Image 1 (spheres, rainbow, N blue to C red):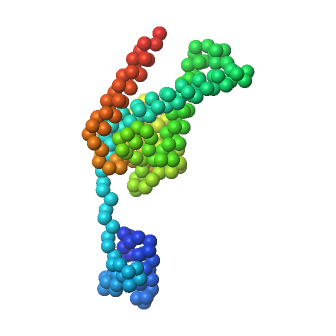
Image 2: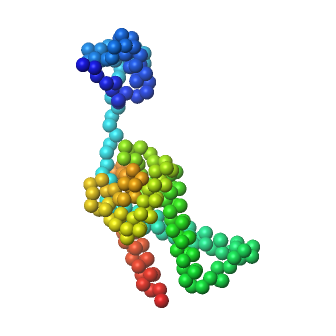
Image 3: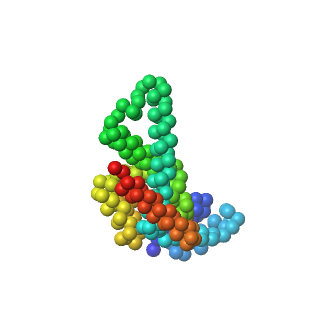
Amino acid sequence: MNAPLPIFLDESRHRCLVMAKASLGNKGLNMDAIPQAFEFIEEETGEGWKPKPPKPQFDPPGFWVRAGAFVIDYYLCIFLHYGIMTAADYLLRKWGIFDFDSLDDYEFDITVIVCMYIILLFYFFLVQGLWGRTLGKTLINAKIVTTAGERIAFFRSFWRTAGYLASLFLFGVGFLVVAFNRNKTGLHDWIGGTQVVYCSRTALWRKTAVIAAGWLGAGFTIYLASSQP
């Protein structure tokens, strides 16, 4: 009975094993030939084969921890939005191109909201594609990976960011499902083929601090919204 090539060999040992396969008659490796192949590897590399230790697996962050991290990212984008809008207002006014004072209250509010969403989505798309984590996820020592555990790139970051829009159109249901499945994945994770995992064991105080920051940020946002005339 032929045995498949062991998938846990690294590239150099895999090449040696292929060479061993050819040297053993090119008829496919059977169980009796495996020890001879390992002897060949040892002769070629100067060391015997040792299995690589498995990577530690950590539970994915829960709903409240991820919600807190999202609120932190949201407030970071608010500061970015304020800086960009202030600079744009100054430059456009100085160059005589446009004056935000010419907008009525409704038009100004729409402009601010649209610019905020553009900055928010671009922020998530850019930092996820570059580093696989946002500021909020960095604080909880988590990262975004593919379902196979590999680093994501801009392609998956784009679809994951598009998933945020889909969740918003569904009144946030796409985010809430994170709390009700074992892998803690939301609609944006399903669309992007991603998942959020801890890079290592995260201290309880750090998780608690991020959750508390999320609650404070959400409460402050609700207060500001309710105090508007």
